[in-house]
Every structure is written in structure tokens, then in C-alpha cells.
Length: 427
Image 1 (spheres, helix red, strand yellow):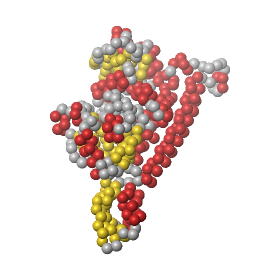
Image 2 (image 1 turned 60 degrees about the horizontal axis):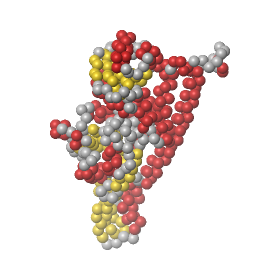
Image 3 (image 1 turned 45 degrees about the vertical axis):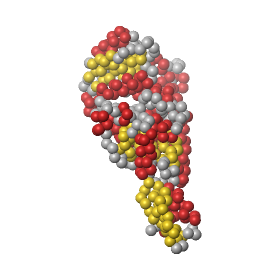
């Protein structure tokens, strides 16, 4: 067992010991347990928890009753008494029975990683959609764990029957939660319909969408704010922003695109959360281009990129055109910078550097511009000439008898919408 102690701050609630169990299964998963525990510390601090110490237990497999084993639970009890802890937060997901057993033995509030992340999301959700999604994730998490909630689930009344006055509070709670989950899913279904209509309108208008994705705290919201002057919350915290934000962004050639910020990803992101936020994350699937924002200064850069790529694959967006933005280059050492690639698909930037932002805007314009096509349009067909300006950037025009020769650099989106109208005039 390893114990790492952090400096304590003035007494406040909750005061927690963070616990990690490293099993053979965890080792096989490829998750770095040390980094995961450090991330749990950051999550706890984001949730305004005072972290007293962390405790790591190595074990072949988890104890079905006590999770870390009865002997280690006793050690945890001694440490908690010594430090005055009132909470224990576990880096892995616990069953309802394990929570009940640990709470009874330790007399502490027991939280696991999923519950902690859900709590942070509940604090961050501001829009109706975000609030619905968080509640759905919380109830989906709670439902299979109801049997671990102890005294709150006592019988309602007499009688032996399984229904009516004799049914248990547990069964009532489950029925109520299932009903609420169904209602929330219905509401999210409405959100999805609304989003689908928005996407269809965007496609009809030829609007191009670019999605910002990345590990939490990589700097997506800062980048959105600096590029578009968006009024978004920016803070050096995990999950500083939760609800997606879309803003119009003007490229150097004058063309406007939609830039959308998405919720940050994290190692061991709860599946209930991915499922609940699928409607929001679907925006990534509809994007014409994905900007993967990476914290270039992070020691865990490679692992964080793998997490993002894996979740994009789960969402079905793994094959999208993508540009990697190695952000926070100003925080990198010369050695770190040297290891970062720099080419058409990889840019080193600082969201606060205007030259870097200009470089990104020019790169976006290149990426969202197709090849160059020549058209011969009759001079009398002003309507067709107007379409040329919709499908791209007119580079040159020459008069040839009664026709005008146009050279056009096509734009993604608009070209797909209008090009068929001009097919017969292509050279």
C-alpha cells in the first residue's frame, strides 16, 4: 500500500481521502493508475473537496464486499480518524452493496469517480438541455444501486402483498426513477429532433461546421473565445464548461463558418455520461472538420490524445477530417516543443498568440476549400454568375466573346449544394 499526503487547507466540508485500487484488470486496461489518481485529485478540487490524502491499494482483483479488502478498510478507518476525514472518494466505480458496506464500517460518506464527475457536471450544467442530460445520467447511475441506500428504503406499510400498500419503498423508488428516466429520454428525443432540423437547415444553406474536441482543460473554450469573442466561461479547471457553444467565425477570405465547442473528455468517462450527452456530442458527427485541441504542455499528452480518439471512435466520428492543435505551446519547454509535429495536419499554437490564430484561420480556409474549377458562363446569365460566388471564391474572370470565363476555388459545403446547377458550364 502506498500513501501520498497533500498539504491541507483550512478546515471545510467535505474533507476527503482519495482511494485507488490497482488490480490486474486495471493494469491490463492500459490506464495509468498514478495519473488517474492525480486526475481524481483535480476532479475533487474542482468539486470544492478538501483532499487530505490519497491511498493506493494493490490487489489481484477487487473484493466483492469491501472493494479494497476488509484489512485495508480498517487501515482506511484509522487514517480517516487521524485526519478528521468525513468522505472517501474511490477512483473506480463501486456497486450499491459496496457503498453500503463501506459507509456502515467507516462512518464516512462514500463517493466513486462516476458520482464525483456527475456532481461536477450537475454544478456546470446551465442550459435546459445540459440539465436534462445530467439528470438522466445521474438517475441511470442510481437505479441499479438503489439497494445500497440503506434505511431510506424501508417498507411503506403493512400487508404481505407484492403490490399496493405492501410494496417496498425500494420498488416505489425504482418505479418513480424509471418513469422519470423515460420522461427525460423523451425530452432528449425532442432535443435530438431539434438538432436534426438545425443540421438539415445548415446543410441546405451550405453552412460549414467545425467542431472543437479535446481532453478537458486543453483550452477549447479559450480558443473559441479568442477566435470569435464568444462570451464563454474560461477557467483552469476540469469541465470548466459543459454546455456546447456555437459561434460564427469569419475566415480571412470573408467566408463564415460555424465553430462549436464540445464538452471535454476525460479518462474513464462514465458510459452513462457518454450516453446521456450523445445528443450534444452528435454535433461532432455532423462537423465537416474536427479540431482536436491538445494540451501540448501536459506530461500525459499521448494518453490524453488516445482517450479523445477512442471516444470519437465510439461516437462514430473517428474517420472525420481532423487537424491537431497543439495548444499552450507557451507553457512548453524547448524539449517538449521539439517533439511536437508541425505540418498541414498538426499546428503548434497558443490561443493567446494572434499570429498563431491567424495561422489557424488561414489553415482552416485552406482545409475548407476544395480544388480550383473553371467555368464558361454566358454573359447574359447573371443568375449563374451569382451562383459561382456562392460555391467558392472567384479567383479570376476573363471575357471571351459572349461568355465570361471564371476560375473558382470551391468551398466545402456550398460547392456540394450548388455545383450541380453549374455542371454543364464546367470546363
